[in-house]
Image 1 (cartoon, rainbow, N blue to C red):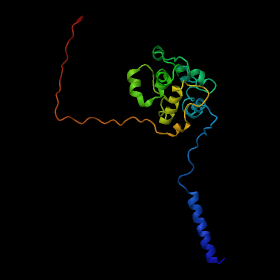
Image 2 (tube, one colour):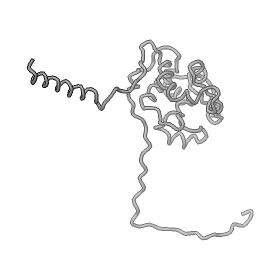
Image 3 (spheres, rainbow, N blue to C red):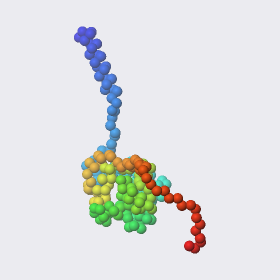
Image 4 (cartoon, one colour):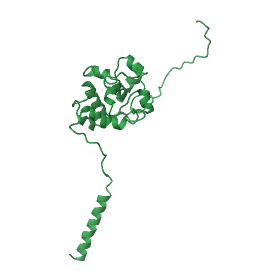
Length: 205
């Protein structure tokens, strides 16, 4: 090969290596593989609870003690399904942490877990159930819409510990609820302002 041709080939190889080595995209996010043998409950435990719930709901943590709910794999199912919540208001309303007493909407409406994670319906949660505590995960982003759909489908199927009742493809929806931006009302052109000065109220009136 002639020296000039050799130099040209070498330059092309060097330029190509620069573009390959400096790719801005980099590797994609690492995700846990969902196996066909995993039950719907197994997927909820490993794909949702493990990353967003277990760190707080572990034996010995303040959250674990306060809620009475432990979500580590060894006890999570028994702690959730068919169990009465420690929240007095939810228990008085007849809710279970996760209801296994009825399929479809009746089971969903009796599941305290669904009330606690259903961020898109937070107006109902805080308006109708002011004593149910805070939405979960506390201090973090809400679950994705795909995660909510997956858990909802599982609850509506009576929350089985084994078997497949929800399509793992639901988890591909990574959109999530976002609080709408506050927009103040436009200043009205006309209006009436009332002013009430201080006044005394007589005892026993």
